[in-house]
Length: 144
Image (cartoon, rainbow, N blue to C red):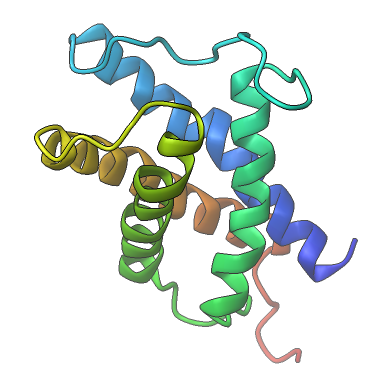
């Protein structure tokens, strides 16, 4: 399997294994009104919302791991993955995705939405790195 395919898979898996469980915790504590693993159809393909999120998680995973120049066996850029997910994905969601979906851009809600997005997407970033590390495996000492 190619490097980009594994990057995609790492980002894809981080959604159901990191992002959505955290969303479930936030929902259970009344922080967000929507539950995880929504099967509500999304526009334009009619995919369940969680599957659409996982697909886009895969796309973002390729971008994040490519930009971080992540290599198996190198120090893990945990903080960079957390910040990339928390800031880049949340920024795109708030400034582009929400308005496109008709959710609007209310400055009064911005701090709360940013914090929730940062937590969810930061968890995705760390999860993507966890899966990338797992999928590539650890290098054997003394081997290139």
